[in-house]
Length: 297
Image 1 (cartoon, one colour):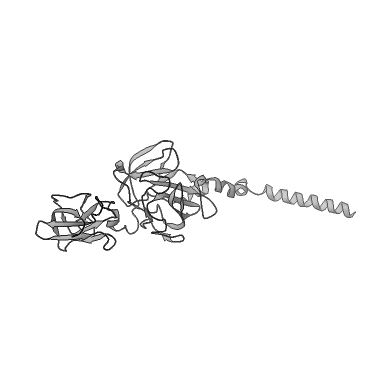
Image 2 (spheres, helix red, strand yellow):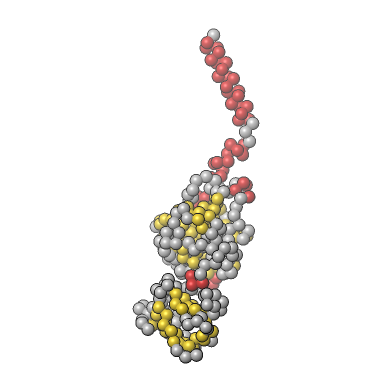
């Protein structure tokens, strides 16, 4: 009798379990595994409006090369991308900063709802500008374009990733990249000119956009407005300017100062390294007649 009741109890429990499973939607039963493999419908609906990870209004060249859906990005025309600032594609939290032999200095940002972005080959130690756990906004500078790791040319390797659970992703979680709602994916594709619409929040200081090896002269007292950039001596310049900026480089070894001569008379010596590489011209507005790099001035 006891053996019969035990068997009857087992049959009843199996029937109840079957009814419960039958009442469970198939999508709910597979949500975790499907979400970990890629972009689900729910995840797609919650996808941030990602923007190019560069200052508003700048133009960039995008390539998928041999690793679609990841992107390699350089400045339009590939005229010199080294040390240009990298920003987050959307607000989020820094999920990881690390180094690998392949990706070099690398940052991952968690944007919520399973969405991440990854930034490879950064020029500086990945914890130079931000650290794990830091909140970031689209205008936050997280690094600079570089050649770290297996890279042999200055570019940003960029990925958008989806993982429904967890706080760290890898390349198996890559999904097609979207910027401003437009998809950029496909094998061996190139987009020669895409304008960044990363325009929310406070823009980074102008001096951060002065390319390595250049001196940049701006017309505005705050480092905005008309700009002239040069990596070498200029016999004449027609810009009326009030502020100048360096960005960690010179055209010749040992020459890290610039002597600036004004049409109104007098001159100013701009020292690399002062105030994060910035040099100020006299207030009131001056017109630069000429300038040249030198060791000391």
